[in-house]
Length: 379
Image (cartoon, rainbow, N blue to C red; front, side, top):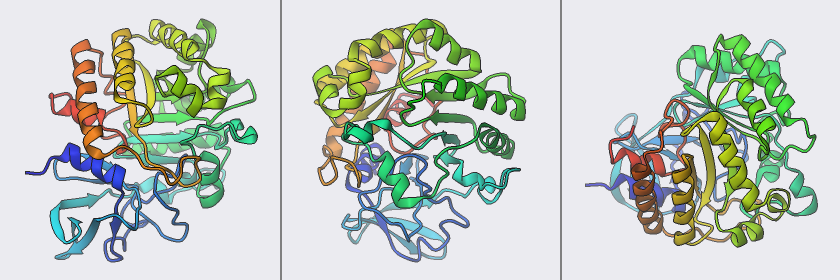
């Protein structure tokens, strides 16, 4: 019997490849990568369309991370059937994800919708309203981040999106019936007017979708202070996210030099507490990059945040091209499985409201916590 949690962790840490026949309908019938924020592959592939993500037989969704040297490979057999192999040993069937209809449409201003918002996993509509981070200017970007190099390498999205265009894409995607919630960020915004920008975008989303509040989350530059956090709540988004990245204060300073100089570990904690007081338990998320710090400190963070009433999104790190850590290697899959199972026990026992209307296991294929919680019946 296949251990799908371990298999997902393995595919995210070892990467995957596929034969040409398997990739034939990517970008037409099946959803392709469009690099809305980061490049998660182990290598670049400017001239090759690859799947964004795929299904395992139990419904687990896995992000496709190209590694042409990986022993894990997909081959097309018997008509349309795709079989995942470890070298020549068959593991299980996989399925690419269907391409959304709105990917073929344009906004009223003539812009391609797919270059504005992409569907993450099965049902999460992702927007990066500005593909830029000021920390790259002084070489103080987070060591794992390749946001700027990805935008330069692929040129597959519009770097700065207009509020009206984002609203149109949201309305079209929600009306299509596949999008269930949004995930929006702005890189590292430097104008001091991010709340105003987000407010304009949410106004357009609400106006064009007819929704009073938009399901999903926004992850701005760390929101600080009751007034600012209340301002984000008043935009009409259902949940707020903090990209804390690393829990241990010293690791955080070393890995995130620019971010830690503007927002300390303690400032993050203060802001998260304030946000929970305004948005409510379960409606505040903290994004972590899992694999950059020891297991013990990572789990300390999970415990602390869960006891506050925050949900956590721990992404599985891979050494992305264009990042300072390119060429390094992530912990082994067994470490990820063991650690995430302990994390899921902590989250489950603290009874944090899951907030599944805002983020779920079908949202993204690059984290494991939802999959571990599914083993406990949380879907």
